[in-house]
Amino acid sequence: MAEINAYAVYKLVGDEKPLIHHITNWVTIYDCAQVTRTIGALPVMAHAPEEVEQMAGISDALVLNIGTLTRELIGSMVLAGKAANKKGIPVILDAVGAGATKFRTDKTKELLNFIRIDIVKGNAGELATIAGVKSQVRGVESVSVSGDRTEIAKRVAKENNCIAVITGKQDIIADAGGKVYLVDNGHELMGKIVGTGCMAASVIASFAAVERDYAKASAAALCCYGIAGELAAKSAGNKGPGSFKQSLFDELANLGEAKIKRMSRVKSSL
Image (cartoon, rainbow, N blue to C red; front, side):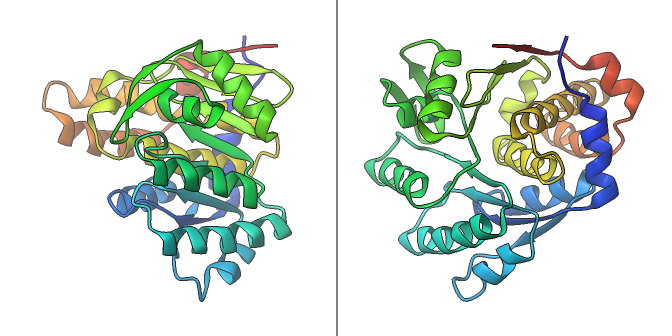
């Protein structure tokens, strides 16, 4: 059984309403803001270098998403990240497309070198790239990975002294000490909606803002997010991805203790 109480962290997000600063993907920026608000946290999307340090200084977590990357955006991320480090709030890096181009790979490594990153999230190909393991990333999708995904997560976590999160059919969360959480919640329709990965980073950040054990926060976040996906698939039926997306927000907003405890599928191991 899991050593986490996902409902307790979910409820704490709604009670404390943490402010989550995003420097994120322009394709999915609205969805990231909406999912953050849906679970009870407060989103702010601030990219300008003139304000990112001040915004990070009043926030409870920072999300950095390289999905629509530019040099200017990296500059803002470094400024915000250093301000977040100074304040001591969690910094979540969503390494979207790392491995697809040299630019993305180099800038991912730059962020890891210049900022204290607390949680690195990505698909198997993206985290394999960070780990230096052979992989193929096409656009922002993981095509192939050489090696065991759990070992890749553990390697990224250890080498970068952070929490490593690999999302997929089974979500894998590893800490720097070798502890692993495996989350089996979710539904295949989540992979057919643009932005579900970016939204997952926002949910993780919201949970990490109120739970200082970032591995537990990440596992609890993906558990609740996955349960909402399962429920949304049932309520949307065969209507299609648009109806599923709408139902995903509704189900995430209305998760209760009974649903989470009944449907949670999280395992932990050393």
